Length: 171
Image (cartoon, rainbow, N blue to C red; front, side):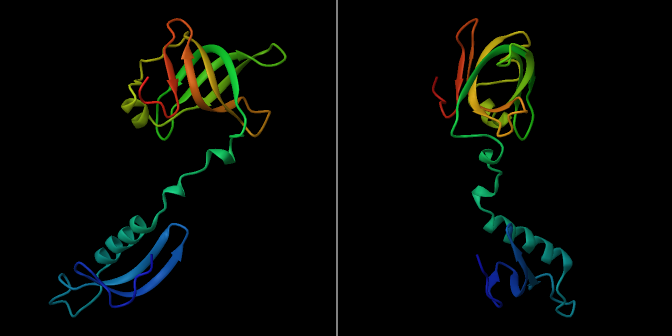
């Protein structure tokens, strides 16, 4: 999104492009309303507001990190384990389980879930899962085989059959 010098955005007149990068463009602008009576100086406050407008207007939705950089999204694994902790926090909740690895050793496995806001909209609250719950978790494994982590795609509580599936808001 480029803005030409002389373009007006509300009370702001674009003077020049200051810089551009992956997150957006920054412009020097003149506040035509607040500048009256002060000799036409460009005000710092006005410039900061325009920086925010330029950033918000040009940030792409893909600016969020890619799970594919951390997890093998083309693979799926399932594990069964005991919930140790539900870390219900931004930007993503984590489910921490104790589960056996392929050598039969107990390992703490961390499964990166969705944001608490999304989980809340889908009916998942802080107290939906409790330590001690036996869970079957499905997801994409970490790209680093030494890490016991996964990107959670689905989960079922063994005791009552409660389920959560990524993208399924109508269980």
